[in-house]
Length: 131
Image (cartoon, rainbow, N blue to C red; front, side, top):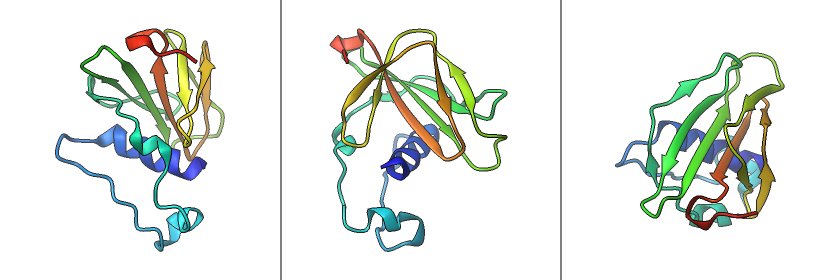
């Protein structure tokens, strides 16, 4: 679901090496997840932060990740209060968008990141990533 991608992406945006993600399913924002305690996306290792967090003029926060085998990832999130909906984030390459069920779909050119959206992208071709 979209909620898990937002929370996971927000976690990755500000992640430090010692941080962990814990979801409490009965807490109000997590109600859509109350019957599911695990999502396949939690099994995906996107590596360690490669860059600091940056914010685009459209209110989209981004951070690049790198895994030791060469896989590159880009995390995007647009929290509430960061401008009007429909913020386009322009991509420098072709990527595969990761869904909550860990499926990959191709993305190139730009991706729209609305308020409340979280997006995890894997760079196509890095460490054999394909979609």
